[in-house]
Image (cartoon, helix red, strand yellow):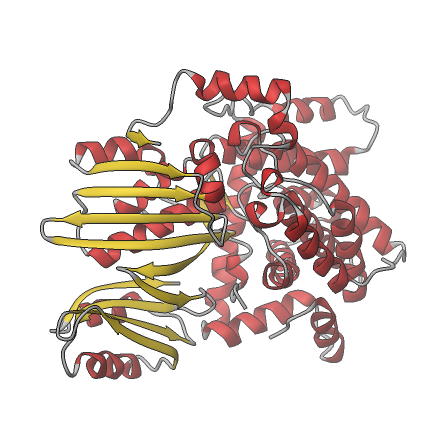
Length: 300
Length: 220
């Protein structure tokens, strides 16, 4: 069992194991479940992610509120034209992150990574890298264990809840997890994974959770999109040998403390930020103002 | 450690849109349902903190009712739970308390009854679909969710605890923490047992079959 990123990296190095293997062995140890069962379950999570991505880029997804849906497909057709500013690997990842969150917003089935509101980043990066790195199915499953290992430390030492720590705890965590896993899949070292996560999460510090009308749609879908792009950029930086000045565990601690300082209005209450703009308030009124979606009695 | 498994992070598989406000809420509802043991007839739900401010957008109300119908967080019928509950004759009342200061942002209090049975439970959704139960029938309990746990409502009679412990040993589980509380001597009591290993459905079913046991719920 590892309690910090430093410990995780040390275990991997001292036993000469990749991060995913440390996570699998830890899972066997703590749950008592067999290795096959654990791999099988992760394979099931991967299937759910793949189905959500496919739905999002092929089907006509619209949420009940109308605030989200269709942007993943827009980006896919833009990509087909081939003339993009930031490149096809990055934009494919961005599109697949949005696909997942659009399906989530439409109350479709997704796999939380680490939460539903931030469920796009990890699969977006994974499926976005598929054409570039051509991973086997086994390697894709390993990517998820590595992402899980890094997320595990954040969840236990800080928070993965937007209501507790803002969006930095959700999309911030997902971005760090995806960056670390991308490094490992590309052949980087455990230290490089840790630096990628530190840079990715460090860049998200202070990000508030301000869902318009309280819906997990705006700005959530686009935060996942740009989270996926940040994850890839942070991974490339780490693979190039760039190091985070502040160690990963201290970045996680900083994220936790920033979350504690955030007023409730900026922590998933829809009372601040983009939710509390002229348009944000108008949308809330349009969606819930006259036509209350509750069909049961509500007492104030 | 609040999160113990990699599947707390890469998971759960669930119906959107929020792991804390939808999946976690469904789990809190389902814990209440399991402890009552039957389909509730009357339900009062009070939401606090972020739950109170954003439950509509997240479908928190819909998710808690789905849990009360014994649906899990990945059940495709979850979005239609309120209609299904109405068809089954479940009377649900919601209230929103934005005044009371709660320690954790996503807190729900659920009072439910069926015939002469009733139950009150307070649950907290801590993020990523993980929940904690902080109160059952007025008993404050400390269930951090770090380990798998059994919540067992039982008759306050000699042997009740021993019989449960024997079954847990039979399944080769190690108890890491245990507390027993009761309202009055000889009346209703609550056992909270945390284990190091995961609790199987088979064990929960066998415990339910014991003579002094009323209802069993598993917190994974």
